[in-house]
Length: 162
View 1 (cartoon, helix red, strand yellow):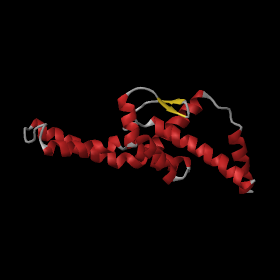
View 2 (cartoon, one colour):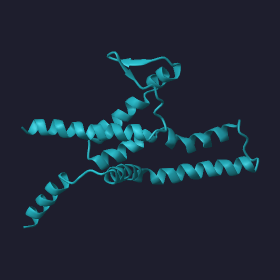
View 3 (tube, one colour):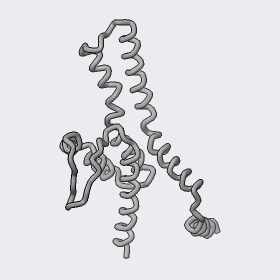
View 4 (cartoon, one colour):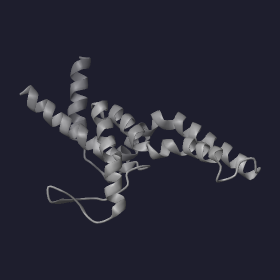
């Protein structure tokens, strides 16, 4: 009986009306669940940056010193590589292949792509324009990418099962 109820609930969920509120809740749910694994790292990065500020204000470290630069690097590296961390969390949330999600983040973060973006001009793939955006420190593009990945994986899986 419980299996029948579970199946009925799944069917009912598929036919529920999509409202703006449900859509917004779904987006916020995806963002929060994708960031949950990163919270500890965010705390650590914040501590490094707080330490850096304390050392700078107390004149124990100057902005040009190697100590300053290393502490700054330690505090900001999480934000630079945020797309990888979000890809990991999003792959767990959307139940996709984690390695593929990380590869997609790597494509977005690839240094040669960053150079193409920084030089300006248009970027085209098979004649189609590609947004010239620096994806380091970004959150939304990788979330959308992993979500699309989850949709494509479902299509591929369903076509394999036929």
